[in-house]
Image (cartoon, rainbow, N blue to C red):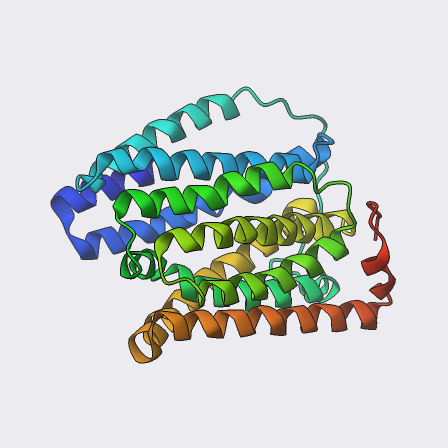
Length: 299
């Protein structure tokens, strides 16, 4: 909350360099709680798909409501800070059971190797996706979307995830990951076919389904097979964050050199490569059979 307020202030009085510095603080703060919250929910026997869906719902509401600020976007940060205050108050009411401490290395090589098929596939897929997202609003505007429609298009994805994630807990996580990776490649390809902003809406629904399957499947895959719940889910978040650094840098250069659709084409190929890597990992680990199992299973 403090870092978010600082972002708004930095825009009003600090300028871009201060804003960039505060963004580092935001990353540090936002890197703390997601893994811990996921571990808490898992230990509380919450279904990961249902739990994750509420994150998507919050994202959707945020995309819709932040549009009311229009050109006064700096005040949106104070609005977000108010929501974070409410989250903080709710978090204070959480009850914790008996604590179990684990001796986990600062750099858990063994855990990374054990879950490498998911981590590596997610790194490649999400790097490709982040290449798109860094210029996605500009791409949408280039095919006719105004600022309000950009928010609506983003919200379609988020609310689609909310509904889809709620029904995914019944399926085997390895199957969900494979479906999510394959459908990601297809989804990004459909972006290339859109010439008007309204044509992208069906693709947003497909995007919602692909990410819902991939995220819920990856989360359950690593948490079901490891006792270090917070660490393995934290590593998954770290992979996403690394992708969120590398992808925008590559995407920015790609958009300048080959255009929006050229960048999107690279992301589609990255999704296909990620699928191949994951399937190979399943074959090596002897878990390839799980792709034919629809019901939830433990690794």
